[in-house]
Amino acid sequence: MTPTKSNGDVHGTVTSQIIDQLSNGIVPWKISLTGNGLPQNALSRKTYRGLNTWLLLGHHFKENHFLSEAQIKQLGGSINPPGDSGFPVVFWKAMEGEEKPSIQSITVFNTEQCTGIAKDKIPFPVKASIDPIKKCESLFTSMFNPPNIQHAKENTVYYDPERDSIQIPPMQQFESPDLYYLTLFNELVRSAYHPSRPLKTEIEIKQCNAEPFTLEALVAEMGASYLAQWAGLKVEVAEEDEAYFNTWIKLFTEDIFLLVKAGTIAQKAVDSIINGRGKNEVPHQEQTTIPIEDEKPKRGQRKRN
Image: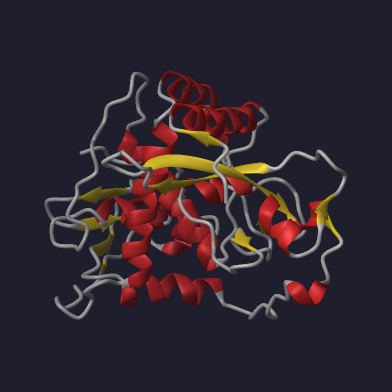
């Protein structure tokens, strides 16, 4: 597997792709999977992680299965048509003479871009039918020492790190269960870095040039969308998101390292939530429910601490 680019070139390449998608009204981390599953390598069956998830979504293939050029040749296939464009994926690799691993990239192709590969060489198991809501609920039994969740009167959504508590209106006040859980997951990702949890490295609260976005906010957006897609929820771009397209483009243009950094941190948070590392070491906190009024909460209406 030969790297195609390194360091600054890699950051510039992946950032340009995301900026192009945003310019066309596509938010890569807010794409519903519609039964395709998260992008994975067709040969190793491993799911792509971090920023690679967003780099491989949104290309309108029937299946999210990808192969490197070397793997295509290994399977006796070829790219069709020849010269067709692939998609970059990034990874960290220890290079000779360097103290720390450096970021590299290779190009992968969707299996629909390939020809000459026998189906039995890359068989995929039958997809199991999963209840998205049950899968969402399972996160709160697997997460290590989950935060307290309060359904309160205020029509605001926020995570309070001092009380390790998420405030959110109850599900029935949202337009759909999917939107409720997507909103809740945003705050859950923020809570993953609480000192009481296994992730010991706090999110660097990096104030970007254009408010209201910080590294923390971008991490929460990415992590929440990944959790929603993992659970099989419907993820859509809301009207409020469209107002921020130019802001995102400006941020990513000014800091080409921001995307990779945010994707890496978001993946760590997601892993800690799904895998529940150390979940038996500290008892789970009880969730508190408080009756509230019937008012539809608006996305993006969150209290800042």
